[in-house]
View 1 (cartoon, rainbow, N blue to C red):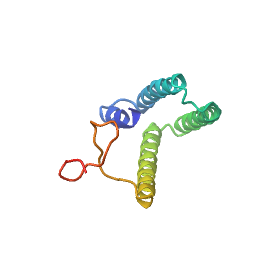
View 2 (view 1 turned 120 degrees about the vertical axis):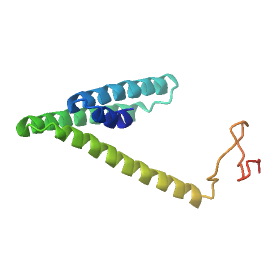
View 3 (view 1 turned 180 degrees about the horizontal axis):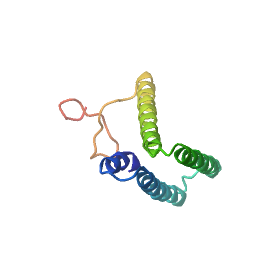
View 4 (view 1 turned 90 degrees about the vertical axis):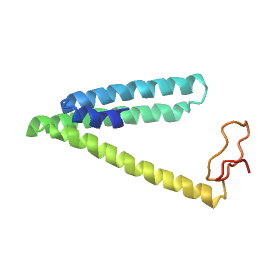
Length: 133
């Protein structure tokens, strides 16, 4: 939500600190609900989850302190906007790279890269004309 709503809120004229805090709040609830869902379903890898939680917390605190210091020192609110844009740009780049790598792996294994039927329990490939192969 924050990657889409952050730029929209900036365009609406909200101050960068408000946009950053709102995006972080939305992210908190999204990740919390997903974490709870994985925990309830028994799909949580607790050792990784605890390690990544600690790394994420320490990184967030460090980033917040450094950014707050930079904004206070240089009296420039645009640094928050620049940081949001940088994170969105890097995330977009890595998501694209991840998608290409996954697609290439599926292709190399000879797996189906097209659309599958939504109506059958065991999905079969659908050809270009929309009929089942």
